[in-house]
Length: 319
Image: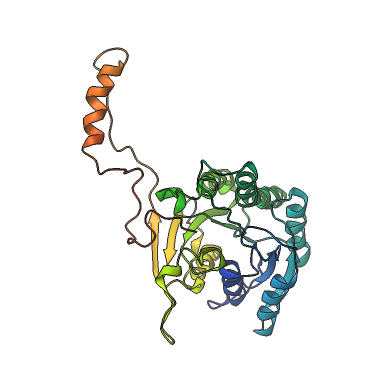
């Protein structure tokens, strides 16, 4: 293993890797020496509509091989429990073990909460949150079994994909924001569960110009010819490569915001203020006396404090 290829001999799975962020991440890991299982369901619609196709995953795998890397394409629905099991097994059969899992697959079905259908809610939660869980469940079992068989920690890396939507709120994406918040909770819980086996688990909140964000960033316009695109997915993939590498062995349970040459570490929620009753039990009047002035003094509509990463996208849905 060289410094230039820290993932040589490793096998990685990247879901939703046929386009956009997932494709950039798959190419990054391949460049670091990993044999990449390029998973994608290949549906043309960003809402998960259309016929499944192996073409997107095959095209990315072919790009990796053309550059001298190793890749295997996989057509599969990560939200299907048995297909997720098969994807992890494919990695094991291909490389002898799964070493890196990057959960990226997702869809969008945006709607205000008062207009959202049951299917629009269920489908987004299914692909994002259940899709993350399915792959994590089988990867975690694989690593636990290996650790028990050898009596020592294994090499395991999970990188999940959340969004600033879970921090900032996203009025037109209650399904997406809820799924992404759930992914953060799943990340921190899994990080604690797998720590003793040597596995790290982290989440990223990326900003990137992809098929899923084309409407969100349409108002920003495209970069001038020859000018760098601050929202290119290639600004995100190096962080994924780092988190997948041996160098990040001591980094786990963390959430990162990443885009355009910037990485921010998100602090876990802290107590902003505390109020104690002067009696044994609070009354509504006492709470009114304490809480109403407190919230009146805070900025209007302030909820959670977002990391100081600029104003791009504040108050909108961020993918």
